[in-house]
Length: 114
Image 1 (spheres, one colour):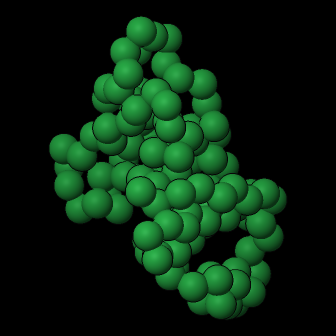
Image 2 (image 1 turned 90 degrees about the horizontal axis):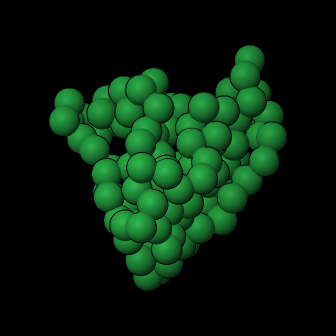
Protein backbone atom coordinates (compact mmCIF):
# COMPACT_ATOMS: atom_id res chain seq x y z
CA UNK A 1 0.00 0.00 0.00
CA UNK A 2 1.34 3.44 -0.91
CA UNK A 3 1.73 6.51 1.24
CA UNK A 4 -1.32 8.62 2.02
CA UNK A 5 -1.66 12.16 3.31
CA UNK A 6 -4.37 14.14 5.06
CA UNK A 7 -5.30 17.61 3.84
CA UNK A 8 -7.48 19.58 6.26
CA UNK A 9 -8.92 22.90 5.09
CA UNK A 10 -10.92 25.03 7.51
CA UNK A 11 -12.71 28.35 7.08
CA UNK A 12 -16.02 30.16 6.88
CA UNK A 13 -17.50 27.67 9.34
CA UNK A 14 -16.59 24.64 7.23
CA UNK A 15 -14.07 21.82 7.49
CA UNK A 16 -13.01 19.72 4.50
CA UNK A 17 -10.68 16.77 4.91
CA UNK A 18 -9.24 15.01 1.89
CA UNK A 19 -7.04 11.92 1.88
CA UNK A 20 -4.60 12.08 -1.05
CA UNK A 21 -1.96 9.82 -2.54
CA UNK A 22 1.77 10.48 -2.94
CA UNK A 23 1.47 11.80 -6.49
CA UNK A 24 -1.19 14.35 -5.54
CA UNK A 25 0.76 15.37 -2.42
CA UNK A 26 3.90 15.94 -4.49
CA UNK A 27 1.94 18.15 -6.94
CA UNK A 28 0.42 20.23 -4.12
CA UNK A 29 3.88 21.07 -2.78
CA UNK A 30 5.73 21.40 -6.08
CA UNK A 31 7.04 24.90 -6.93
CA UNK A 32 5.14 27.47 -8.98
CA UNK A 33 5.65 26.51 -12.65
CA UNK A 34 8.44 28.42 -14.39
CA UNK A 35 6.21 28.82 -17.45
CA UNK A 36 3.87 30.94 -15.29
CA UNK A 37 6.67 33.07 -13.83
CA UNK A 38 5.63 36.71 -13.72
CA UNK A 39 1.92 35.85 -13.79
CA UNK A 40 -0.31 36.15 -10.74
CA UNK A 41 -2.53 33.25 -11.72
CA UNK A 42 -3.03 30.79 -14.46
CA UNK A 43 -3.85 27.31 -15.51
CA UNK A 44 -1.53 25.28 -13.34
CA UNK A 45 0.65 22.57 -14.80
CA UNK A 46 -0.81 19.40 -13.33
CA UNK A 47 0.77 15.96 -13.78
CA UNK A 48 -1.36 13.99 -16.26
CA UNK A 49 -2.24 11.27 -13.75
CA UNK A 50 -3.37 13.85 -11.15
CA UNK A 51 -5.38 15.78 -13.76
CA UNK A 52 -7.08 12.53 -14.79
CA UNK A 53 -8.06 11.92 -11.14
CA UNK A 54 -9.29 15.52 -10.83
CA UNK A 55 -11.47 15.21 -13.92
CA UNK A 56 -12.99 12.00 -12.56
CA UNK A 57 -13.42 13.61 -9.13
CA UNK A 58 -15.17 16.68 -10.59
CA UNK A 59 -17.03 14.59 -13.23
CA UNK A 60 -15.80 17.01 -15.90
CA UNK A 61 -13.49 15.85 -18.69
CA UNK A 62 -12.42 19.43 -19.38
CA UNK A 63 -11.72 20.46 -15.76
CA UNK A 64 -8.59 22.60 -15.33
CA UNK A 65 -7.66 24.07 -11.94
CA UNK A 66 -7.20 27.82 -11.66
CA UNK A 67 -4.35 28.58 -9.27
CA UNK A 68 -3.05 31.90 -7.94
CA UNK A 69 0.63 32.48 -7.18
CA UNK A 70 0.04 33.93 -3.71
CA UNK A 71 -1.72 30.83 -2.45
CA UNK A 72 -0.87 28.11 -4.94
CA UNK A 73 -0.30 25.35 -2.36
CA UNK A 74 -3.62 26.12 -0.69
CA UNK A 75 -5.47 26.41 -4.03
CA UNK A 76 -4.09 23.02 -5.05
CA UNK A 77 -5.00 21.49 -1.68
CA UNK A 78 -8.59 22.73 -2.00
CA UNK A 79 -8.96 21.12 -5.43
CA UNK A 80 -7.01 17.92 -4.73
CA UNK A 81 -8.76 14.67 -5.67
CA UNK A 82 -9.37 12.22 -2.85
CA UNK A 83 -8.23 8.61 -2.95
CA UNK A 84 -11.71 7.44 -1.94
CA UNK A 85 -13.73 9.80 -4.14
CA UNK A 86 -15.11 11.97 -1.35
CA UNK A 87 -14.21 14.65 1.13
CA UNK A 88 -14.94 14.36 4.83
CA UNK A 89 -16.59 17.15 6.75
CA UNK A 90 -15.56 16.01 10.22
CA UNK A 91 -12.36 14.65 11.68
CA UNK A 92 -14.35 11.81 13.24
CA UNK A 93 -15.49 10.59 9.79
CA UNK A 94 -12.00 10.94 8.31
CA UNK A 95 -10.40 9.01 11.18
CA UNK A 96 -13.04 6.27 10.89
CA UNK A 97 -12.24 5.88 7.17
CA UNK A 98 -8.50 5.77 7.90
CA UNK A 99 -9.00 3.14 10.61
CA UNK A 100 -11.46 1.03 8.60
CA UNK A 101 -9.20 0.99 5.52
CA UNK A 102 -6.05 0.51 7.64
CA UNK A 103 -4.44 3.51 5.97
CA UNK A 104 -1.28 4.99 7.43
CA UNK A 105 -1.02 8.75 7.11
CA UNK A 106 2.56 9.78 6.29
CA UNK A 107 2.02 13.53 6.76
CA UNK A 108 -0.68 16.18 6.96
CA UNK A 109 -1.29 19.74 5.87
CA UNK A 110 -3.68 22.39 7.12
CA UNK A 111 -5.06 24.94 4.71
CA UNK A 112 -7.87 27.44 4.48
CA UNK A 113 -11.27 27.66 2.84
CA UNK A 114 -11.87 31.16 1.50
